[in-house]
Image (cartoon, rainbow, N blue to C red):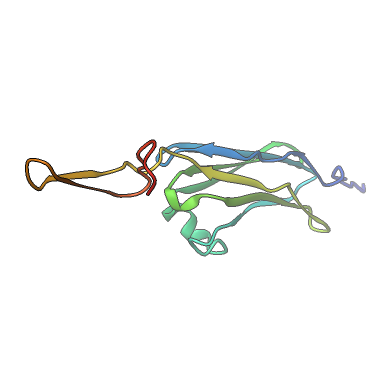
Length: 144
């Protein structure tokens, strides 16, 4: 008796999508590949060595692989957002032993309120005061 198993062609079914989040938020990037024997997440960040898989968890990144059906994998990447992660690139890579395909690139955009301005006012005398501030503060109608 001869039996053979044929996997469907290797393809990306769902690409990860760019997400915008604030520091402290948790975001999930999700992708699905079909005809897959292995999968991995590729992260391009200047803040840490993205080739070191052990460093992912220490940076708040957790990767989960789930076999949905024979040869179909759901790859989920959960990220605890930090300020330094702005513009981090993420893509999924799927492999079937013969071929490798990568998903489209998704970005993590870190958003948040502008820096809180700090204004210091020193009264010098009855008619004078000194005003100092840190950026990004501006005073409407007053050129700096």
